[in-house]
Amino acid sequence: MVEQVAMERAKEQVQAVGNAEAIHSVILYPAVGDKVTAVHFKPGDSVKAGDVLLELDSRRQKAALEEAKIKLADTQRTLARLKQSQAKGAVPQSDVDDAKTVVELAKVTLTQAETEFEDRQVRAPFNGTMGLTDVEVGDRITPQTAIASIDDTRALYINFNAPESAVYMLRNKGNVKVFPWQSQNAVNAKIAYLDSRIDPQTRTLRVKAQLENPQQKFLPGMSFRVHIEVEGQRFAAVPEAALLWGATGPYVWTSVDKKATRIDVKIEQRLAGRLLVSGALKEQDNLVVEGVQRLRANQELSFSAPIANTQE
Image 1 (cartoon, rainbow, N blue to C red):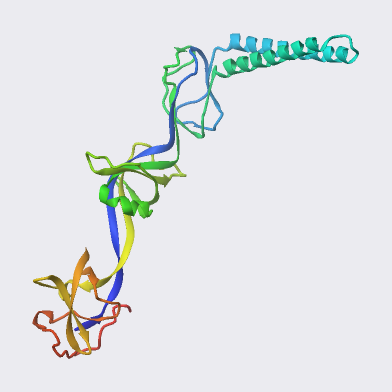
Image 2 (image 1 turned 180 degrees about the horizontal axis):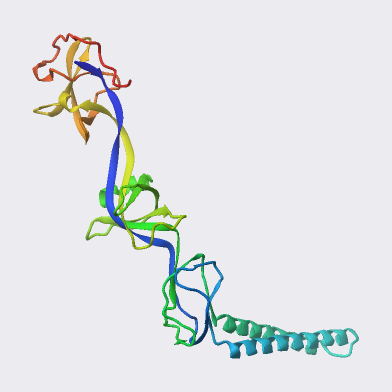
């Protein structure tokens, strides 16, 4: 029996186990230490960037801020009066310059007071979900006190290690599917980042795949099976039964003008029931798939059935 050669792309695959992490994740610490006067979140709350999450005692800082505002306003009024007097020739330029310097110094003092007041508040750095906290109103905390974690889980990174041999296919941004550890349902992901070096001990590359998580079904720390597939070059697909082995390696028989012609090939990939091979085989060449063990070069061939077209 003879059938026409079909071409098929080789598929390269990588399988690994990865762990999820939030695309943005930090542990919040206060900028200064003092007594907690308000906690504006509960574990699990969704917060927006800029939301005030915690306040420290700020009475002294608030008073200093008001004082700085008053002093700045006073220096600005003084400068305005001096400018009016200078226009009439009543005061020298040096007095106006000194007043300008005092205004600038008052602005610096106000900025410092605003910063110290703002340091008494802990704000959300980005949209996210709050984690557990042990901090309560009345606690006295320090800059080393961890307040809580905040995670942006609208997307997750799946961290995994890939073998050194997979670098090329990873750079080609193959199709990435991840499977939650106890589920057979695949979820599409994409390669986000590759590490800049191969680990010399394990000969693996650290990889981050990005998984969109709009419903937040998946949590940081979950395990995933990672499956990556990249289509490679096109090769001739031949049935396993058509391949023979000789002293020089594998070969197949083709029919050229109804005569047996031997073609040496190289196996590129093994698939279920067929092999992808390279060599002088071309698409739609007539490949002998039965009775190959008894063939000799240039042997006349006769076919009991029409040549099968594997393209159909």
